Image 1 (cartoon, rainbow, N blue to C red):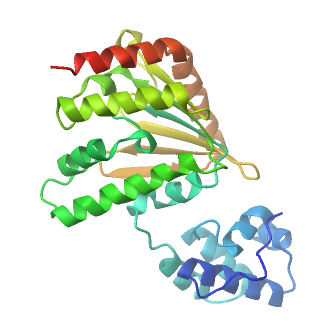
Image 2: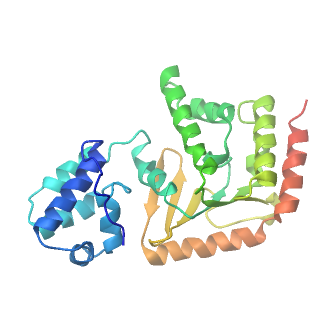
Image 3: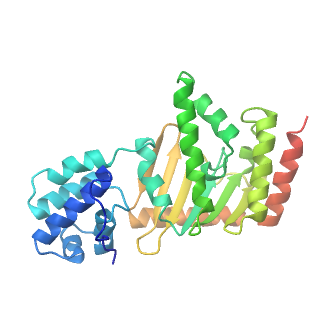
Length: 277
């Protein structure tokens, strides 16, 4: 069961303050994490993650906690502060969960996965998506994307399995030079990073599940798996077990239809040559 460290400073951030307040209110009510979890239909581990400021508070859970602890709207108000993020709101929860995941399995139909993007590629994508945004805003978004990549450098980096549609290798995002460098980096990561496996779904594979949207499966050491799906300007974190299982089956079928890792690296290498003048 996750326990909040005794030396956690509640004034470090709104999220740590929320966690400290939740723990204070729970202990005042004479409840263990598991007992409180039962009252709001979640696990004691889940409560512990909120108290330890590991996971962002959820509005619906905060409402249930206020009701269970008879605290009015106290935790709901703190939740609004604690959920502020540098990431877009629709992705912020998924970004937090990436840091906790033991495995990340992604299907990317049209773009190189965010964790594997180069700075120039990310900048070209961001500029295309935010045509009228000031340069400063674009650079901020690119910096945040590059910060996410540090996850792969951590000693506790998750295992990453990415299936990329061949179409994502052929679209010259940012022009040939930018795309060539992106593909070279992708090939290098797939060949040399011991915790990353790449596969390419070839165009001749035809129709595939969730062909028009990114889908990311995440598993954890002490929590149920989740799925995150994303399309232009929006995304959704899915935690309902039956739907997560359905996405996992679809991902397994896509992975089975993809080229082997070795053949995928050969295709990526040939795509590099296609981007060479």
